[in-house]
Amino acid sequence: MAKARKVIISCAVTGAIHTPSMSPYLPVTPEEIADAAIGAAEAGAAIVHLHARDPQTGAPDQTPEAFARFLPIIRQRSDCVVNITTGGAPTMTIEERVKPAATFKPELASLNLGSMNFGLFGMLDRFKDLKHDWERTYLANKEIIFRNTFGQIEHILTTCAGSGTRFEFECYDTAHLYNLKYFLDRGLVQGPLFIQTVFGLQGGIGNHPDDIAHMKRTADRLFGDQYRWSVLGAGRNQMNVAAIAAAQGGHVRVGLEDSLWLGPGRLAETNADQVRRVRLILEGLGLEIATPDEAREMLSLKG
Ligand SMILES: C[C@H](N)CC(=O)CC(=O)O
Ligand SMILES: [Zn+2]
Image (tube, rainbow, N blue to C red; front, side):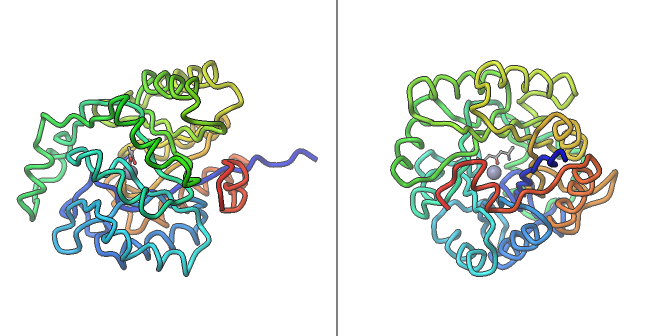
């Protein structure tokens, strides 16, 4: 009797791309972020990807103190895998960005494999009533470069080396896959590589099925069976990208960090709603949802 494939659902609950005026459902306070993560885990997410925000303004906050306000709550109430961002916001320094992962030594941390133009301004057409000045300045900025030089990537790898933290490798284009291969060949990263291919973010690769096939083909050629493939689709293509990839052996990432939507013109009221929606798609494909411990097994996490 053929065994169903286990799929890892990751949920990125708040991020640093969307801003509070865009959706009343975007978690901002430590309590909201903790509840969102625990709710997503209860709905089936094995991994929660975490950023922190200033509780008053909702602005991205990468201080360890900000993370310390919700991490223990999540620890107490869920056995999900915690994935702490080292991307922070593209306007932060690398020192700021790596601090929380270096401080809390999580099982997983994100690592971005290349620099890119980071286009948030496209969202200004969609979201006009912005409450805070920082939102307008941040979103309208056409000069944002999300810096991830070889030196900065190496700095994060060496800073976290020895802590047992493994990485979710964010690849926004094929060049980033080659950058990851470079670090693999230098022994700075070890398999199984958890590769999160990102589709449809302005400045990165698109979200057409050809783009997805191209990223997978390239990763298959560069890493063979040394990698675990996961995908995230930005914005309203989140579920399409998940469905296309899941049908080809991929794991999936959802969450309000990368899409505020549950359907055309319909804001997701919770991260758990998106987890439940992608779960419907996966189970519809005859796939099973991996538990946190099964994800730990598949990704060789320290537990
Ligand atoms: C496209 C995603 N928002 C990528 C991300 O989650 C990066 C990070 O936090 O380091
Ligand atoms: Zn993130």
